[in-house]
Amino acid sequence: MGWKSHGFRFKSGRKLRKKVREKGVRIRKFLQTFDVGQRVHIDIEPASQKGMPHPRFQGRTGVVIGQRGRAYLVQVRDGGKMKTLIVRPEHLKPQSG
Image 1 (tube, rainbow, N blue to C red):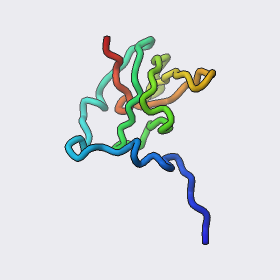
Image 2 (cartoon, rainbow, N blue to C red; image 1 turned 90 degrees about the horizontal axis):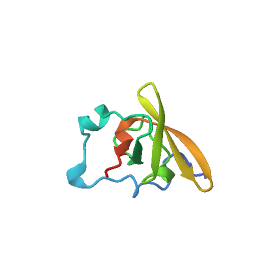
Image 3 (cartoon, helix red, strand yellow; image 1 turned 180 degrees about the horizontal axis):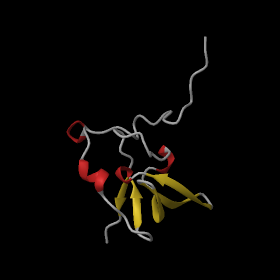
């Protein structure tokens, strides 16, 4: 008997699940742009695996500090440390208000 894999999406099925009527991809999420200094929410799009942050950052809010190719550098607090994530725009949502 082999060992169970504990990969990147291990135990994240419920967190990354979409409801039936939300399935599929909305193209406007891929085309949205953000400015440096803008606050964004990390909202993982399970249909797109490229540029996906670790599921532990789902629902976190951070600040865009730069851009790297199509992806954005987002700084979030994780415990007592600030971490920089490389996230594609389909996994981000602008903070309203």
